Amino acid sequence: MANEEAAQIFGLNVLHRAIEDNPFNMTRFYVITRAQRRRPSGDDKTSLLCFIKDVPGALHQILMPFWRAQ
Picture 1 (cartoon, rainbow, N blue to C red):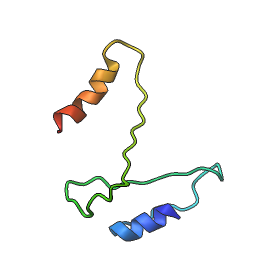
Picture 2: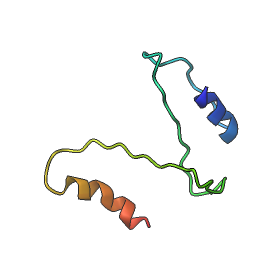
Picture 3: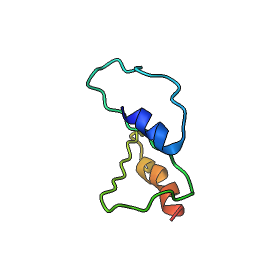
């Protein structure tokens, strides 16, 4: 199970097990930190899923903090 493996790798505790309501569900968990524990492999992938209102400037507003953090 990915959550158990991630917990073991990063020294985290699993709070709940088998909480999905769909047996085909795939959930990935990420630990975000300023400390770099591993070097990029070259096969790394970053995905971002956002739900925003359909108003002028909404996409700009949600992406601006990422641009500022460069």
